[in-house]
Image 1 (cartoon, one colour):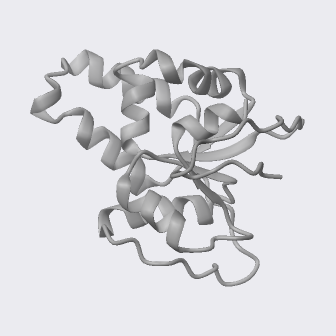
Image 2 (image 1 turned 30 degrees about the vertical axis):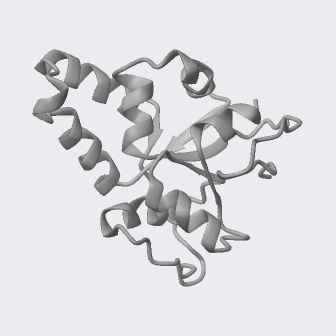
Amino acid sequence: MTKDVPATGARPQAVAPVFSSTPLRIVFDTNVLLSLYVFADSRFAPLRHQLDSGAWQAVSSADCLAEFRRVLNYPQFGLATETQESAFAAYAACVSRASIAPAVPPASLPRCRDRDDQKFLEAARDNAAEWLVTSDKALLQLARRERLAGLFRILTPEAALLAL
């Protein structure tokens, strides 16, 4: 069961946490992964704790993981090879890459303005994620324009924090 938390825009309101024995399935976009596994953004430490504790289950796809690995190597970050490998290994250790085989044809998804971001929508749908946590403007704009009811919610990291 997902919680009603705002995607973006209006000031987020506190949400009563939902307790479940089943981990919440979440797709994280690459920018959020960088905050969690490379830059250790202290604002998002509770999100990392949810993953490390098993309260949340990160789910992904081969394409999303390949993008994370590729971005870790961007020269502007200046990350040593060991740092890149450590960040990727830490995430890979907790992420599930097995898609849930749909019993029916997969639900159609809206098209994201940035074609490179479509893979995150597909990963969320194909892995039965409850949330796609992103800081990407194109995905967040899509969340405001499109209804993804019955599939998953697109949330900012800040909105996901409010659900804790």
